[in-house]
Image (cartoon, rainbow, N blue to C red):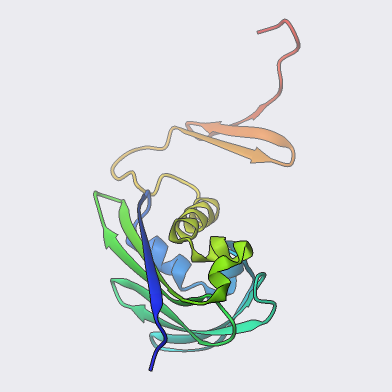
Length: 183
């Protein structure tokens, strides 16, 4: 018998195709880069649409095993099967929106218990934080105008260790700060 749980849902529109989002969700070894409060993530085994992932959570202090079921063309269901986590289940639904855009819904089911009073756990229980993290990770891992179809990329701007660099119509320009008083 399952203990009682609470559900919270967040929705967002992403400027990339559903395939890019599915790829990010299935990149379990990268979850520590965008899932709230996950300090490390490691794929233990994968067979077809089923995977088992080990997560180390900053707030729980130990390893958490998660069973992930990819739902082809629809999303991902991740369920905690072992470990101390305030979250019981995370369900991602990914749908195509307008041309090149995606509609993403994430629902988090969390256990009811004393961990609800622990402020350190709040980010892991907030589905909007998952959407924000995924959006930031996708924009860094897949830069470019995925949402544009039939168009031409005229301008790109990048911040690098060497400073700002831009490309206009395929030509690279390094931006340098203007002197004081000069345009």
